[in-house]
Image 1 (cartoon, helix red, strand yellow):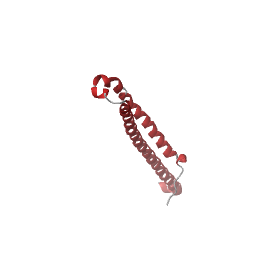
Image 2 (cartoon, helix red, strand yellow; image 1 turned 60 degrees about the vertical axis):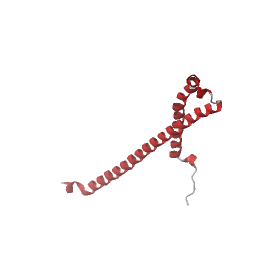
Image 3 (tube, one colour; image 1 turned 135 degrees about the horizontal axis):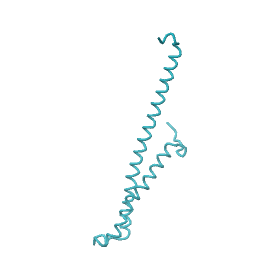
Image 4 (cartoon, rainbow, N blue to C red; image 1 turned 45 degrees about the horizontal axis):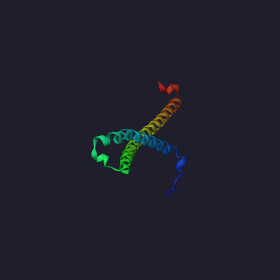
Amino acid sequence: MKAHQNLSKDVEANAAASEALKGAAVGAAKYGLPLLLLPILGPHLSPIYRGLTIQFKVFIQMSGMTLGGMIEADRRIRDYEARVRIEKRRAKDAAAWQRFEEGYRESMANEGPAKRK
């Protein structure tokens, strides 16, 4: 069985975690800012909102921010994975192309100028 690695030294995992953290912060702000209008407009527009306790109003605000953070973090992590997959594929293709070119140069050098004609 494979032993667990120290994740603090795993560059790819740390980059993915950083991207997810940025997404969570952006999502919390993106969903939380519009919900800040709820305590301002809610009491004027809805008698139901007026009857809610402070704790429940805070819960509504926090749940919107949490939902936004999860959605945006997930989107960012999927985009990051796609970017990394493309970069790895490009590196693999570049290495294969380089091996092909080196083999071709070697075969041309071994043939000599007389055999090429």
